[in-house]
Image (cartoon, rainbow, N blue to C red; front, side):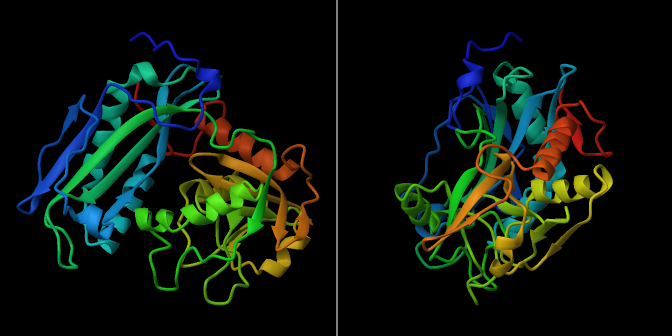
Length: 341
């Protein structure tokens, strides 16, 4: 199929309608067989559960063209697992993992013309999501749901690409202990909107959230996990029950250990330690890794030794190795790459 006439190199991280999306409905205790549709409109009752009580969850993953011309998706099985965990937490019926993977394949295949070419710096972003679709007035779960998956070509999440960013320590809490911080629920992101707008208005790229209980431990940002490098070259990432189990972060830890021979661990990280780290990055599906050059804590600046001009050496190796695996330049661990075409 001939590619669409799109300026791939100058795409932003924004929605562009593509030809097809996948839809399946849950009613009377079962999911229907699902279908691809050209209709990108969602029609709801005014009292739908998603509108009244924010009963919605989502995922994010990418399809892209490898160096040898294949179109692939990175570790979609883990997205299926995480969507299941999120569904159970919000009392949404689980969309079976095998059907999730089938929906991913069908949606990518139907939108092949929108998969950016290799070397363009762009990818086809996939957004699976689920929500309560029938009438709800009392505070309770919906009884009918919809699973949808759309695709849209995107450029880098941060406009500067690999240029180090500046973040601030937020006064807001991202997630409560025993709350929903460890699932990908829309409500978690809704509460971060005011905080990120505030940060942007103050000249920062993102927020650093600390734990809600003590405000002494590093958690994550509004849309990515942290990864730090010690002055000895050890890779460390925050461990907490209230942060999202990032697929990218887990992959980077494996890459650090198995591909680069580095020490790596997940553990609680006190904010007081941050000033002693050599490098810092934000990791997630959208950005892979965005280097952090400066962290501002209520006017006090913590400047990472890696600087504001480029990625630090260890973060750069991690980025290059993981993207090399994704793009087919480096042999991937078994099961990490799902070939679509």
